Amino acid sequence: MRAPLLCLFVFTLTSFAQQAPYDKPPSVAPPFYRVRYEASVKPGELIFPVQYTVWIPAGVKRLRGVVVHQHGCGEGSCKSGQTGAFDLHWQALAKKHGCALLAPSYEQPQKADCQMWCDPRNGSGVAFQKALADLGKRSGHPELATVPWALWGHSGGGHWVGGMVMLHPERVAAAWLRSGVPLFEVNPDRKLIKPHALPKAALRVPMMCNPGTKEGVTVKDGRFAKVWPANETFFNTVRGRGGLIGVAVDPLAAHECGNQRYMAILWLDACLAARLPAKPGQPLKPMPTQKAWLAPLLGDEAVPAGKFPVNKTKAVWLPSAAIARAWMHYIRDTKIPDRTPPPAPTDLKLNGNVLTWNAEADLESGLAHFIIQRDGKTIGTVPENPKNRFGRPIFQGLQYSDTPAAPLVQMRFTDKTASNAKHIYRVIAVNTVGLKSK
Image 1 (cartoon, rainbow, N blue to C red):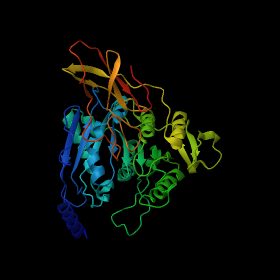
Image 2: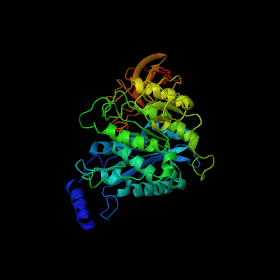
Image 3: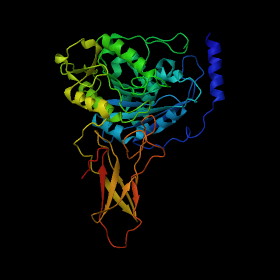
Image 4: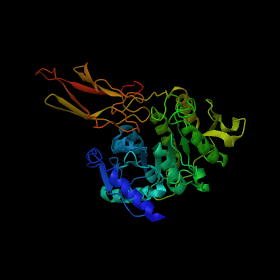
């Protein structure tokens, strides 16, 4: 039966040849590196072309891990993956823990079955590990091939992330599953979907399911109504066996990513701090459980685990009091409090009347925009009118799969009203809750 399936896949690839911008991703130069692999026609290997882009934080002698940002299904989401490694907010998380930031971009035609990449057993898992080894060589960080993974995935990317936990639990520090989950029970009509086994080691990997409320929680019909039932089944199966898994329902969104990054990055930050080994090459540390908090599934109040009154194996698992408090804000309105201003911009330069600078994102709240001042007075903002139809306005914009808008926005401002006199310029960063940098 292998040969007919293989012929079908070859026909599919030929029928849906890719067009730009798959062949025009953002250019890379250190600290960015990229590899691209062509589609394979060998049974069991990846039938789509794929490119992987990685960012390496400056000054890191030996990487401690890699944060993987995995887009979802469909041609638009796959294209959006091309900018994932350039996201300043996700870079802030990776840098804090001495990790690389990697973003795949599968070149899946819109009408092709995305199970052929979002199930890692169909070749994408092997391609991912090959990319880590190849990018390790290109970047001068061969340890990239062996370091732990912190996995984030949207939709089909969530399916992929969960699948990698089932297949390689010893490598995964934590996994955030936005909307998509791997399946343990599969409708027999879906012949290309294979159920996953749940190994005991996967129960020790902290995971968070993150569906939108309009994906079957409060809205029971429509295209994404089956997302919640799948999440609920996955949660109950893992948690019922004692797994370290939670649920954070996005109260504002459907299948789009919305404001989830403000919770996901905090949660991954806590997991990485707890689990990354002190010395390179050592195994991941066990996730601490003695300070966990619990909450009822679809409830809105978390309490210390010792005070939870009912069956703990049916409760949402949260690793700490700080994460539990952030979770309670997130599931109410996504407005997680933040009292830390963003880092101040650096390397401000003036060339003629053009200002350029560099800046890092605030780990808690990212970057919304920059204020430009001349001689103590505000003369503009960058972007001029920050927008984001999927959530809080942010400097880099936001695509459907939680990646920066293309083309990438630049830290650049042209002062069109400057006189010939000498001027003093300042650039101030503003995060998404309105806090200003020095």
